[in-house]
Image: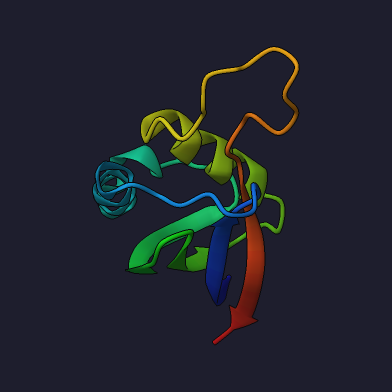
Length: 102
């Protein structure tokens, strides 16, 4: 098991979390029932959030958990924007911008 600080950010440049999304992210990360039995993670702890990124402290048991984690949070916190025909980049998805073993 490896303990890491991992920062996720919105892929779409210039996009920011609104206050409800910030509150929902914090709530859903803290309530660990979403992460029990989650492939690759032993523990998840909320650390901080700003306008377009958030940081979690994780106990990682496998390396390939990021996409599943990101997808689950996008679903729980309604981070997907509505599709607009003719415009690319409509979905707000999360990606890792910083990862540090502690």
